[in-house]
Image 1 (cartoon, helix red, strand yellow):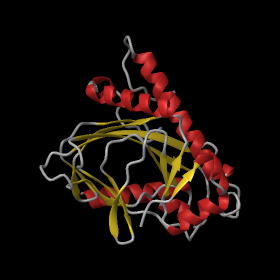
Image 2 (spheres, rainbow, N blue to C red):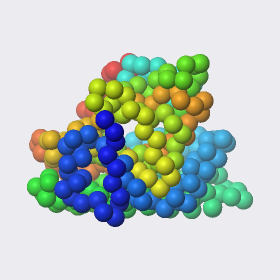
Image 3 (cartoon, rainbow, N blue to C red):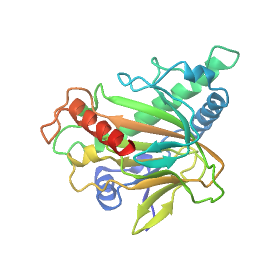
Image 4 (tube, rainbow, N blue to C red):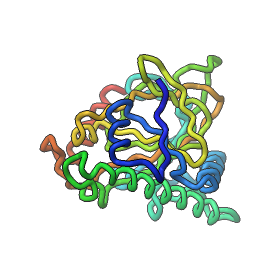
Length: 268
C-alpha cells in the first residue's frame, strides 16, 4: 500500500476524510515554501551542532518547550532508543540560537517555518468542520502547536535498526515536515513503508485524541530506523486548547496527564 498524495490547494474535505479513514496518513504537496523548509532544517542542524545554548532551556511542561539533554541510549516506552536530543520550539517562548552573528537569521528562518507549517495545518484541519459534527476552531484556538526539532543517531551497524520504536501518537494531529533524511516508516497493509517527504511537503496524521471526534480515523503506527548515521527531523504536534471537554467527557489536561503517566510507567 502506498501513501496517498494530495496537493495542498486542491485538498477537499471529502478527500481528506477518505484518506484519514483509509490509511491515516496523507502526504501533502505545496504546503510549505521549499526555501522556508530548507533554511529551517539548516538552522536546526546548526543548533544541534553547538547545543550549549539549548541546554540552558530545559523542557518546561507548562509551555511544552525546551531541551531534552543529549543521551546516546535512553529508554522510551521500555525500549532503548538512539534519540540523541530534541528541542521543542514555539516563537516567543524558546530560541534555538544564542546571540551571535547569525542568530537573528536562524531565529527568523525557524519562526517562518513554524508559522508556515502551523497555518498549512490549520487550513487542512478546518476541512473537518462538518466531519467531526462540530467546528474545529473552538478546539484549536489557544491550543498548542509545538515544533519539535530532534536529532537521532544510528549507533549500531545495521541500517534498519529501530532508532525510535513503533508507536501511535496520542495527541490531536502530528505533522512531519518534509526535508528530513530517510528513516521514517509507517505500517501500512501489514508491512513497513519508507516515507521520505521532500522539502515543502508535509505528512499529516491523526492521533488517538482525534479519533474521539472522528471514530473512523486510522491512527498510523510509525517508527524511525537507522537509515543514516545522524538524522535531524522537524515535527509539529497539534494539541487542543486547555479546558476543552473531550467527547469522552474528560478534560484535555486530565487526558494528557493520564497518557504521559502511562508512557512513564512503560519506560520505568
